[in-house]
Image (cartoon, rainbow, N blue to C red; front, side, top):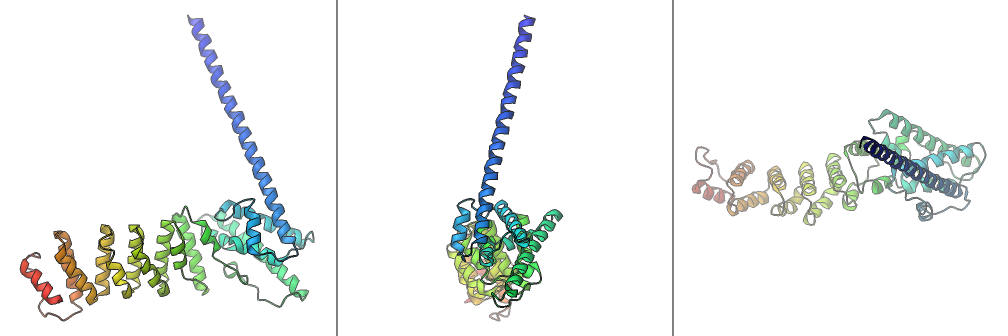
Length: 363
């Protein structure tokens, strides 16, 4: 019996060992296959990039993107942008040593199509020193080689003189769409670190006077976190041109967090023209949205808002809400000299006489 048990244990151990060994070989084989596939993909991508860079014909952005995306879909892929950056720098080094001649237009098309410069500028906002140093190196390499190519062309009188930017943060290329990376990179994920990096990026653009209207990303993104962030950035940079745009979104927005961000931003910007849009959200909003609407109406201190609070007061059966509304209306009434005597605080807030008094004062 003991011998039989020992045999069973030994056989079981051998089976487990065999299974583990097979798993190891399978994992190794799979990893090897993936590595070969990635190597082949990189090789194809590098070859295509080099073909584009040495092509004497000035290629369009659509052609460049369709060619590269057919190999690897680069838009929104941080890994893909890093690979392309590496190949661009390698190609530029070959050009420096006379191994190939770059077509500057096509070089710009690759940079512009995928927002590569802006991708590395965003990396400068990281709290990781290694990432910051790597981003700075890549920016310098991409910028410096571009400047060298421009100087070569100028010296050959092939193009008119152009001013070369002095720093990576102010790096510009004519007809360059500098924010394409923001269009493509935050459709699925946007975390706290991304917020820090994008905010620093927008600050840099604002300081150079090149910050566009941020409502573009509020309208186009499907990522709620990114949309909320951009709405708050509109308030931070006080982009009044965006106020009417985000106010108009309130009527079609179903996400309460986004509604809340819009209302708080409009309140911060003191955009009183949006008050009708804001109060229209009261019935469909959650408790946070409703509270923010009342606070915003108090902030605007308009007769329209006072009338809205009054109507809401008499339509509600919520005692706590009525209390909040009376406090809000008293704050607004300070802006109007409708009635010299204030409501007597020693009386109950919910005395019927006070209801009639408030209604009389507002009307």
